[in-house]
Amino acid sequence: MSISAQWIFPVEALHHTPSVATSDYTIGKELYDRARGVEFLFRLGSSLGLPSSAMFTAATWFHRFFMRFSMEDYHRQDIAAACIFLATKTEECGRKLRDVARVFQSKITGVDVTHIPSESLEVEKQQTTILLAEEVLLEALCFDFVTTSPHSVLVDLFDAGQTSTKVQDYAWSIAHDSYRTPLCILFPPRIIAAACFVLAQRAADGPHSLSLDARISVSPPAASLPTPPSHKPASPDASRFTVEYFGFNEADLQQVADALSILVDFYSVQDLQHSAYIAPLASIQPPAHGWRSKLYEPFSLLLPSHPTTTNNGQTPESSQGTTPALTPSRGSATKRESKTPEVPARRVDLS
Image 1: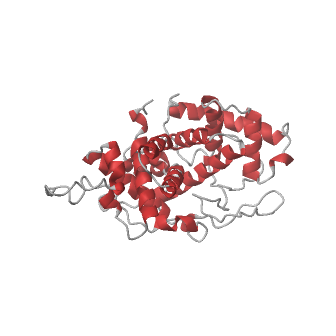
Image 2: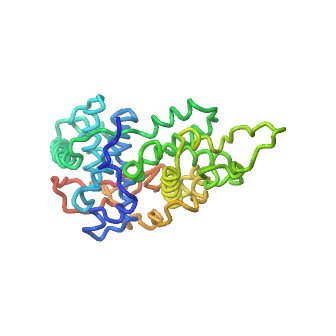
Image 3: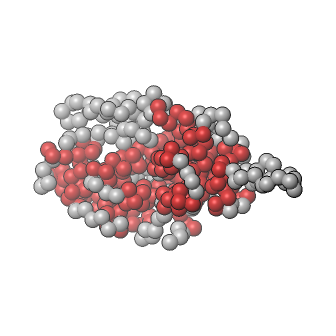
């Protein structure tokens, strides 16, 4: 099923989201909080044992929601929980509202889920929070639940060519990370899949391999030269496999370049001390003709200065560092005037 045109926005629209237009949010701060919100959503879905497809659907709705409502008005964790609950219904992986609320309560308080009674007052309040957030989510989505993941396109791409396991693993992981960026509301799935695959090839081939520009050029550098009659045509260039497979035109390739620029920008602001495996991605030069306006600010500069504590006064430790895109941050959740009920317990910012 194709995605409605109403859900594909120009990159410039990120400068005019409700959060940026109606509050003191910068685009860098909003993208940082979107990444944290999706990370929280993934953690919530994983704890509920949901399939990846349901979490990708929920993450897409999360990004769509905040193109119509401000992060000042609705907390990212509440909307993430509502997206997960709705996805359990549309993706046929049903979970009881009480179970979702119980895990949600566990995540925002840092209390092990086994220590949270199903019949507790806190769980009851979180059920109400999720249902109220779901009402606004349905309004924002216009009851249009159709999404398509770039992963499904990547599967076809893998099957069509002799791709190394290393490239496939890289591409699959980058496609996961793409949901921590707003790519799913900026480009069609095949553009995102192509960008993930090309970036994966570049990372796997090493720092001295062909640039991203060369991999997504309209034609190979020597394509215009005649082939001598006595010579056989050169073998297909694996670095241009994606371009050949999709038959991209110049407009498509410009979109791929823009998507690559955003992905490289995203990786460049990560805390590499805690995410060493993304260093090869962060050091890659973006396409020269890609989106040139830098969208992201270093995440280390956006981390809240004072960590939130739980009710017993203890700050929960993260075993994986503080990079919000790939690991949990430990700062306090953003305070907002919520249209959903306040939770008495302090939030632990595990996103």
